[in-house]
Length: 186
Image (cartoon, rainbow, N blue to C red):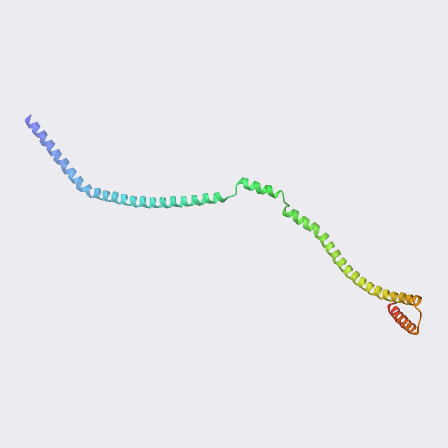
């Protein structure tokens, strides 16, 4: 039995040695692979860190851009007209004429205004002609009044004063002058 134990121990030792050899063989065989896997894992971790850093930087840039956009949007929204403002403006438009109403009024009034303008021009022309006629009438009337005054003067002299030769001559002169003027007026 002791032999069997020894044999069994030897057998176990041989198996352990075989296992050790197998482990060493596997270790030798896979150590290069494990080193490569570790290197690849380190490379992947390095790339992941770089990508993480780039992503973090992009994210920070996007957050900054978003904050800028948000502040500008808030500024624009603060300057926007509210619905209440628009309703107030529309209500004010109800108090005034629309562009179409103004155009229609203009189109309706243009012929009337043109006719009025033509009549004013005609009245101005007639007024100028009437002024000329009045001036001429005034001139003629003034000449007739002067002649009439001379005739009246002669009658007054002949009735109030004695006639003398000089008065007769003066009267003749006045009569001749009045006659000439009277004939020129006719």
